[in-house]
Length: 393
Image 1 (tube, rainbow, N blue to C red):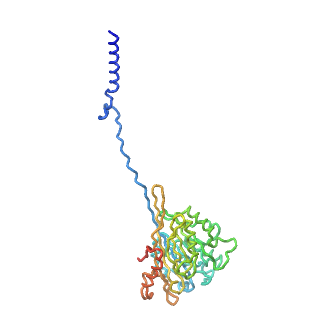
Image 2: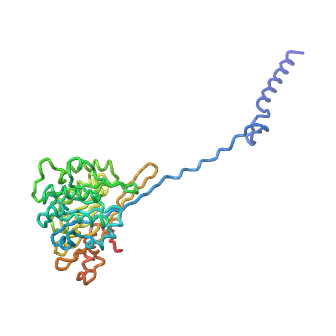
Image 3: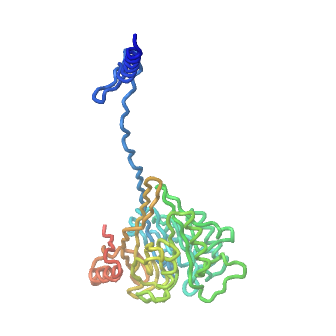
């Protein structure tokens, strides 16, 4: 056998081995599936994962607010029944509108120090404790106590009033029994999982000095103090509602000082501002804060129940707004929206039979030109918020 023959046989054998290893029974043709022997563990096909549904939880509450509970002697004398006082009949026609909100807040203009201290009227008020009972019965959950009459009858009236508010389980803000009491933020935790902080401040106390070392008796408007408390409230609550006793009495439009203070509070992130003191209605507005946030404000809620007898001082209302909390994929968005208003009228005859009545329900016998007055009030309150809804049911 020649060397050439031997070389040929070697090359042929080598090529055969290469072909067997590359094209044997386990080779994969691009157009065929690999062959599985009977006993082999076949892999399960991979099923595509369905996309997760986004978690989207929406909760909503409503809050109603009323203006001045300014209890003149004509009002508490009318409420006298035997040896006690009953203000419930005065609020009966508005109770359905207060009790249907998740939270209702009132501006309690006069301290309810009770009869033991001696009742009194303008200019230094002290009212029956039964005023608080009637508010509770009507559906009110929170009272604002910081106003120009807070110190009318001194610390004793404040302490007596707070004792009663606590006895009937009513949250109060703006005036406190101690420094420790003041340090406790007023936050309402609702069943819907939305928390609301309530703050309250007044421009002054009719010249009555705050007792030395007892600043907790009344919250005065102080921008540094307010900024600090707003910051704390925003950390702990979803929404901050702030009551302000400010403005000029009997003026139907806010002045520049009111507007400037509201802008300051909007810049600090307050969600809602409830104004009192003018004793007449001032309009609703949306104010944009420096961070682009929107603050809902009603500059004055007017008198809700009082003995004042001039027409516009007999008109108040129930201001209602809604809060939605949306939780989606780890993010939470809280929105104040859909402001509504129910104008009310304090009806009485010869300083008797006081009754707070929704204006849309007034008859011509109860108020001459009732429908004309009602339309004028609607136009006045919605002048800056044309979409403001009016409650009529």
